[in-house]
Length: 391
Ligand code: NIG
Ligand code: FE
Image 1 (cartoon, helix red, strand yellow):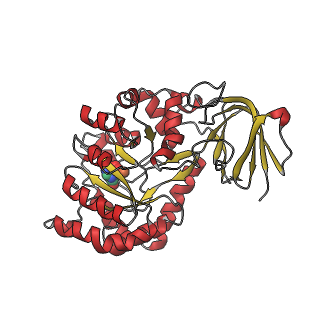
Image 2 (spheres, helix red, strand yellow):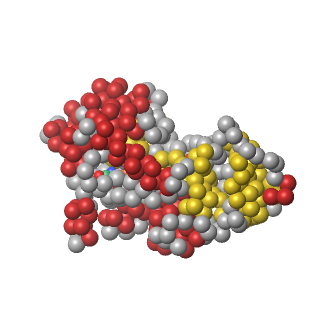
Image 3 (cartoon, helix red, strand yellow):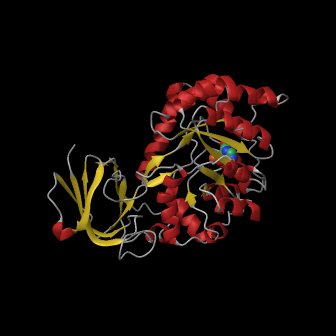
């Protein structure tokens, strides 16, 4: 593989603060970065830059680690635009529309699902996302959950089994049987394609006992734990996640002091999904409270056809700054290093020698512009594993 030198970088966000660098973003100015074999090989002053096979002139722009979107649901068919319009006219979001997407997904061919996954993955990449987790959860049969994960695994190694998204209509009057199926044949069929297991622990979806049983079954076959928790109201999901050593509890919109204290004393990341609050007209999570308590916070899109049909991490960064009182630096860290922490990865989300060369060059001089210029396509170029991506 050839080497690439990016030089004349005006501002490099490393997320690896060292001596003489202020703040957690570890910002370095007026540097060059050498990529070899898909990894960052060297960072230093432009005048000392080594020769390389290819040179990219950043022209004084900012360079950041690629976004790590640690929460998305890309395997689905159809859309729910009419449901969105009804919400904007005052209807509440209840999660009831999930079953609509389940019907459309079951009826779709593999190639239709694959086309949607690839379209959304490419859309996200153009907006700077170099790692994107994706979940099953719209199949809810053994075969449909397994194929959802098989198709997801074609575009990402961060795949999550969400057979416990909701109880499907055919099991509505026997949820215990559905949980037994999720823990038995469905998990067996899904596990070869999954790294993680997730449960929607919420009133109307899965209660704490079912959620604990399902997550424990996943752990027993080697899957890591993540939880959809405290999205629509207060509940036990966050504390269950902490109890089970979850890598991340996601949404965290309705938190008690006990939830915040449990997170603060744990390695579990709180992943906030402001696209969902935007698109459901719900109150945003209290990011300040979590950050001030010392909780590690990540930002992700929750890209799905119901509650948050955006693949844009820059949009989520802008929402976090404007609506959740995160500083621009905190939001950029949460969307990069925070996402990496939520996926328990130390090879991404940072730019330092040895890290994966997953990065973006902005059409702007500073990371501040991501929130300062919302809705503007500011991602000039993306490198994934050191390879410049086509636009
Ligand atoms: O994370 N909350 C559960 N699942 C998704 C929404 C799924 C849907 O509405 O289709 C979420 O918001
Ligand atoms: Fe979700």
